[in-house]
Image 1 (cartoon, helix red, strand yellow):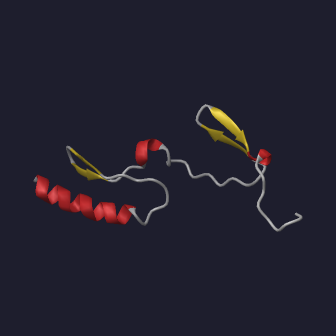
Image 2 (cartoon, one colour):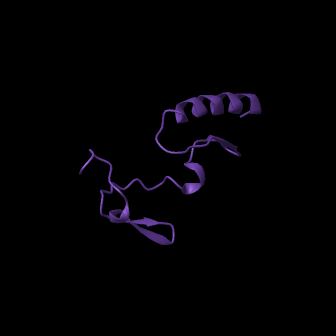
Length: 74
């Protein structure tokens, strides 16, 4: 695949990536354009709720320590 064609496909993928959740990048590799999450940071999309222990790299974040947003007086 020639570079001009790969660049055109990469531009289309980039426009598509703008609508996706998370951080995405488009790279042109030896086999053509690739669309993978930025540096593997958005691979897992597990649902968590307030109060869960959430893994974050080598750490665990206790979400119960965060302030909850709500109405005044809650």
